[in-house]
Structure formats: structure tokens, C-alpha cells
Amino acid sequence: MNRVWPGNPRGLLMERVAAALWENVVLKSDYVVDLHEGGRAFMARYIHARGTEETDKIVGDEVRRLCRLFGQGIPVLGGVRTRGSMLGSLSVQAGLRGIPCIGPELGGGSRIWDEFVEIGVQGVRNVLIGLGMVQDEPVGADLEQVTVNESNWPKTERGGMMYNTCKLGEVVEEGENVGVLRDTAGDVLEEVRAPYRSVILDTRYQPTVYPGDWTFHCGKLA
Ligand SMILES: [Zn+2]
Image (cartoon, rainbow, N blue to C red; front, side):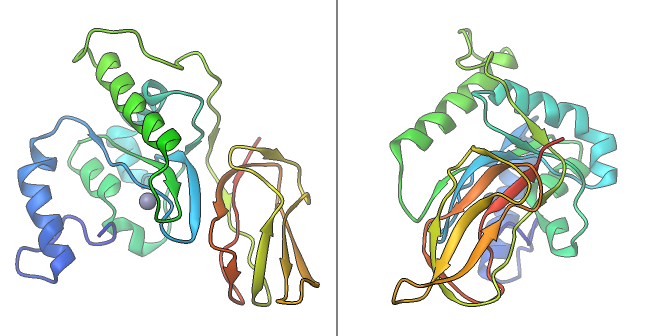
């Protein structure tokens, strides 16, 4: 659904769902927190806050403010989108309408993880507190939160089983091993290395990897 915003009431199923949410929820909102997770194959832990040059001018400062309010030391993926399909994301389309939107990406693997649910609930609460909608003290506002404006997923040449050697949120050096691809007998086919000094934003949950597949999401640290 996050490629078809703002949807189409006479389109395909996902376009219809998006159109209904757009009309009845998004356009009536001052701010949007679009809670995501890593899907079947990945585990994620970061806030997606990437816009286009245009949305950055309109809502960039407010988006960065929402990320800081969400807090809890969750890394932020900022910068500007270049790929066309991303223009149909909720954050870009809402941003063009002047509605700041952030996309926390927490957990994954088609499972519900208590620890990530807790971060999401507290993050939304922190945002509400920061916006003056709830009276309370935010949690984890003092934790260091890095922002990266560039990221990369190193790819594998072959298919196989991925053994992770990095953890979500870990900082790795340029060229450091983040995963080992093995065949079904356990022999090493390839080693996956960080393209630059990075914070790990996504890891593999599902070990099965195809040639050219996404492996680990490395956010470039200055
Ligand atoms: Zn997502």
C-alpha cells in the first residue's frame, strides 16, 4: 500500500484502502505517525523520515522534530528519495500536503515482538507529549539518536542461507563483516561487508537469500 498513496477510490484493493484512509484520516490530521515493520524477511529498528526535495522544504523541519520527539535512541533515516516508486509513499504524499509524517520501522519477521510494540507505543506517546496533547514526561528523550542521510543494502552474488554477524542498531566499521552466506552443507559462499561505517537499520530474519537479494540495511555514519 505504501507505493500507491494517495490512492484511488475506483482502483485496485490497496488503492481503495489508501484512498479511504487518505480522505477520512490523513487529510484530517495535523501529524501522521505511520507505524511499519520489516515484513516477513527482515527485522527493522529505525524511523523512516526521508522526503523529496520538495517535501523537505515544506515539512522537513517538522518531520525532524517528530523524530526527536519519538526519541528512545531510535536511528533516523533522513535525506531525499530518488526512486520513482517511493513518490507514492504516505510520508511523501502527506508532506506535499503540508502534513508531516514519520514512519517508524520496528520489528518484523511476521511476528509481534513485545519489545518493539513497547517502543512504538512509547514513541507515539512521546510525540503526543511533545505536541502538548498529553501531559506527562517523555521516556528516552535523552538517549542519543543518530541521523543518517544515506543507506545501502549490500547484495549477494549467489543464493544460500544467511547467518547474521551483526545486530540491529549496532555500529560497524567500513568493510566489517555483517553476515556470512552458506550453502546447505554449511560451507561459506560469500561474506557480506558493510559498504561504509554504518549503523545497522535492518537485518535478515528469514535466512533464505537469492542471488542479488537484499541483506542488511546499512545507514551511513559521518
Ligand atoms: Zn515500511
